Length: 120
Image (cartoon, rainbow, N blue to C red; front, side):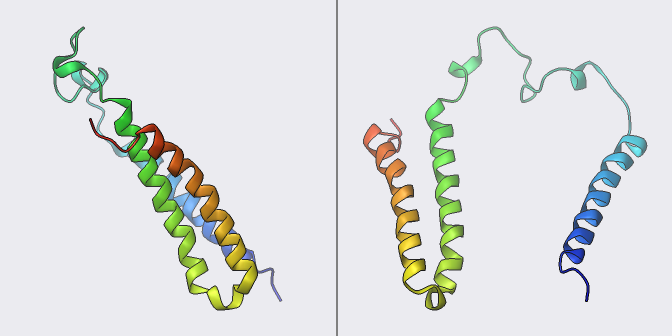
């Protein structure tokens, strides 16, 4: 009888070899035509100016709302296994999921009350 982790370790090794092999192949086989435009910081194809056109950077609220959507997408991912195996988890699963939902609801209500979902 073999160790049940051997296939997992083998798969991790194959993934590492493929990832490092791809990086190595691109470093060896890839074109190396450097010019002034490629060595500069990426500015969407527009020459950088001291004062940004259009008011500058995105407001921080944009990123906060994006991170909130990511957090709630992850919450839904955690809810799927619970919903699928609801019958065998019984009361322990129900209590654990209610605690999880309560912990996720607190920052949601906090952000809602602070006006994080308003786009004005």
